[in-house]
Image 1 (cartoon, rainbow, N blue to C red):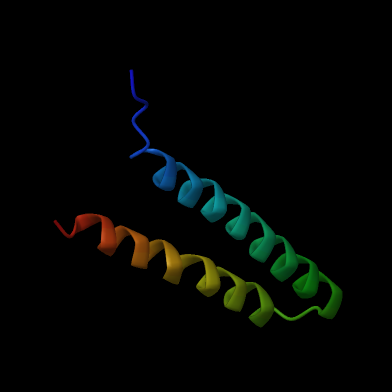
Image 2 (image 1 turned 90 degrees about the vertical axis):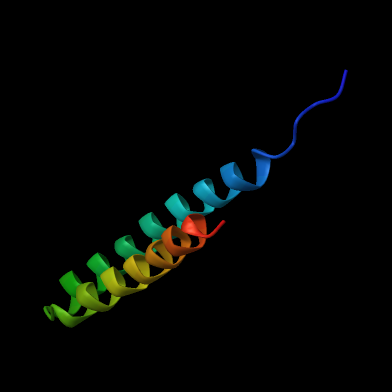
Length: 62
């Protein structure tokens, strides 16, 4: 009996996406609170939204 490995890359991508999102938003929040500027949080949100949008577009392609 063989094991289906087609779902493994999708799972790894999802885990990496969650880790990336939490890490970038955490650093952005920390810098924003440390400096008192909101631009760091805005940049961090952009670094999370753009890759997620790219993955969503890639998933739509046949």
